[in-house]
Amino acid sequence: KAVKLLAKVHEHGLGYMTGFIPFTDASSSGSQIFAAMSRSLFDGALCNLVPMAEPANIYQEVADKALQAVNDDFGGTDKDKAKFAGMWIAAKHPSVKSSKRNTMTLGYDSKTSGMADQLYDDIVKPLRRLKLAENTNHPYPSNKKGQRKACRYLAEINNRVINATLPSARA
Image (cartoon, rainbow, N blue to C red; front, side, top):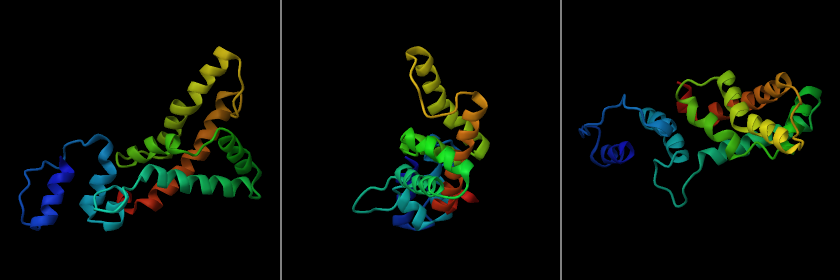
């Protein structure tokens, strides 16, 4: 509803009264809200606020850029980063699954530590349960501390990529 009202403002001008209450929580539309409030055409296009021939997918955009950063680390000279990068690549991440929640919550002041917790809860913890249930392997360290470090590594990349991709969310 908020996006439709903002489209009317665009159509009728800044004097148009929408009746929109801006402090209402729009759940996963945080990126759209920041793009609209900042009037960023660039961010608006990434969040589908701006009419385009093809719809954008901000989550895929972040995942693609994060994957490039992980691949760069995997081929780089920093052995710790290369090790963590290899783990995430073996697990077929970064992907939309590992970037979506981090992207959605940036507008709610999520930081790297919170993003790392999200990655752990959404990706690593379920694999730990699966490993215990089916006695299968996964690419992450066997101990919780190492798994948390692996999540912190990807969270730092996601945070950096999201902030670079959606400048309006940095404010």
